[in-house]
Image 1 (cartoon, rainbow, N blue to C red):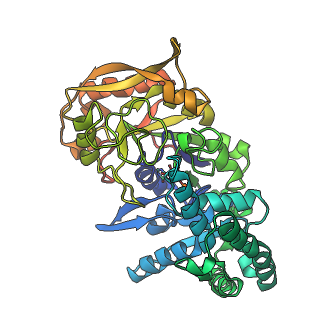
Image 2 (tube, rainbow, N blue to C red):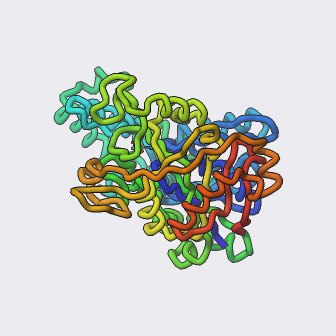
Length: 458
Ligand code: IMP
């Protein structure tokens, strides 16, 4: 069977920890979208590993697959694999031949476009990893796929077609001389050919390229368990998120089928677990109706630190939860849990279960609030409007819950759900009732032993 892990909010819900926990029962862990914009930290035998591309399961001896829906930066991937090998591990990572490759010019274009947009305050706040420009080329049928790196003739032909276009965009659209760039070789066909052909050889020598859908289907036919790991989250999904403040892929459950090559029937007959952080964070710009404080440069209209109404609370949660980007180190914006957002996420992905994380971070607060519904133009809404500008106008109708004190979380995880403070259970049960979905797991700390497991999905 498959177990699909989906972020229900804006990314950073603690998916990695749940993948890590439930991944113990999986044989294969496959990613279906995104690239090195994601980031997760895994602690294995006392060692800490920070990874962007290598699926965390690969550290624990599982087969890691980067599905066709991913965008792969071979520089990042091989740097991660080299680091893991230097530290004595031998990760088994396969890469879909259909996955698109992030080239150096994608990062350049990501940076230039953000810079231009920032002049009018319209930047998305991307991770700068070239994600959007790579998916753009995929949709524009001018992308380069992992399979293309394996064939020198195809690789050269593709580069000769696309690179002059990219040079023209840089020079003629943005008025930047390529020679003035920090790395002009990023737009040089010969230099790119040499480097990426070498990556192709390395992929081949390591036996990494696969037809992902077939590979996963064969694994399942042999009785293997497949975990399908989403990156980012529902509200930054290109279709179901708050466009244009989104990433360029589908983190929602539909993406698990298109991005792995397993059919929707296969994915749908497995479990789909929505990962919920007990509060809310956001990296980058865009609305956030339950926002508590603000981050200069990201929160719209927020000019100086200290302006937010609940600044201290936001600060406390940010520090307690370590809410700084894994990839970029940026402080994350912080807000209360947003139920209209979660109702939307639950409908889009059809969650069969939830994992509710970081309840320990909220411990010690007198009261914990949630945005129960919104008011827009005098009307009460139970779910998010499709238009981002309307979402920005939504006012959250807050509900208050009595807070809970910290307990020995590892002991509570061991003992089970009943060991959770009563007020925390009330909070969990409210979420379960509102979303009509059971909480399979409750995260009460960053460690592997700090999750209350109520159901093993495999
Ligand atoms: P991109 O994916 O780098 O193009 O960035 C697009 C938007 O998605 C920006 O607002 C990023 O901050 C956000 N984003 C991308 N990856 C992540 C992630 O792993 N966690 C949280 N936000 C992310």
